[in-house]
Image (cartoon, rainbow, N blue to C red; front, side):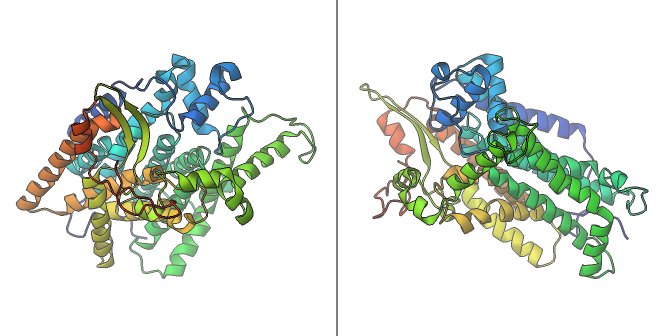
Length: 492
């Protein structure tokens, strides 16, 4: 079978190797992301928005004190524990204060920028393209806000982007000449023959152990693995390619996509789930029975029965919440989420609003369409394949289940944001004329300018009423009759 590295398109030379310029670029863009995210991280000093759940539960993991943490010991948010366990590490390091419960999220948000650089560098083969993609994520409004609050979505995003990076590295490592593995002497040696694929499974398992929609990362890993097989030059038929790959790699796939994620998921419940281990799994009070009960409770929260859904308090709170929005409206930024509101008698106003960068998000819609068209015309664009696969497995499922989920909000699109940045960078990289370069420079400049302009309502800086009004571009906030949707654009 012919082995060759996929090229961004048929006209491009083989991707260049990592250089000193890459080291400088990734260091600078990551340092910039850390600096803007870490500045005044402790504001607001108290619990804000859903930190009410995640920070307090993480506090209990450390101190086991309902009085200190403000929540009963048996209070559990409807998500797996890994993200909250990671948040608790910051509390252990810095104490029960804002810096403590936000430190882990700050690190994950900053690291996500570096991981995206590595992914873009490998798929675009360009230092400037990778800097552009990572730079857009560094100043993305939603990612910025979520890197500064103790919520698990940024941790989820980090693991998902890492899983995509690892599967791309696995593919490239294999194509560069790793042995096929079908003649190895044992199933065990074949299972560990693709360490980067295993790393993708570890990251995917960590994503699931943070939030259930991390399952989409494993779907993305599997889909990218399949695509790498199908587009590899070979005279074999579609069936023969797939059958040969499964026969050769099924031990590695099983270990990476099933065994490892399940093991990570179960192990994350060990520190927080009580129960006797050395007893029958169905015995009342056994660890296994308590573990299963927790899974059932989470499932009922996210996908309640029709009767429970209409009667539940969560349903009515989410249905009437002014920031609720269905998945189709997220890329349009119709309903940002208001995390912090403070108004003083001296005409000083503070806001923290979670929203997307309008320039980048709206441009990404066109970018995905352009990249899909390019692939449809037979151009092999590696970054396009990764970005489109990601948006398919991370965003499209929300479109399918938004009618039955209890509380759809804009922040659910956060794991897709790095790939929106990658899609815009892929289009920019595809434009090679001198005039196009000026457009890209202008776009980057405008993106930075917008971030600077909106920064006060992303970080809670004081504004006059006039300055606040200037940043509330859309004010069509009259709710529909049943509220549970956006009707017009409302940034107020």
